[in-house]
View 1 (cartoon, rainbow, N blue to C red):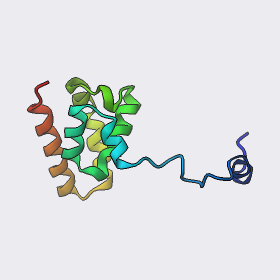
View 2 (view 1 turned 60 degrees about the vertical axis):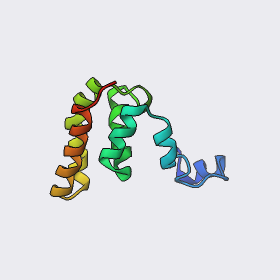
View 3 (view 1 turned 90 degrees about the vertical axis):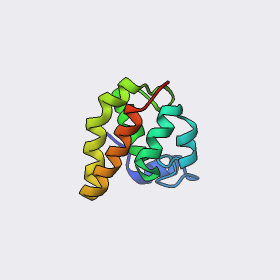
Length: 106
């Protein structure tokens, strides 16, 4: 059975409720390879977590992203982006990401 929040706070009194769940944006960019950095640039910084979390769900990560993995992840990335953005903005965002993928040369 999960512990109550008050028990969890007593075990870690120095940590706030969100201290483990926040990651600085710069750390996300530094953790990725060149393709990941370009993909984040195409998506925009606010959507970098969508990319990172989608890769994580696939069993990949920012440091080892390949063009093939990005291509496989595109439908899921698009689904997540469309949930968070207005239709035209999401279309523009995904067009930039597809452009990065199609023009990628390792």
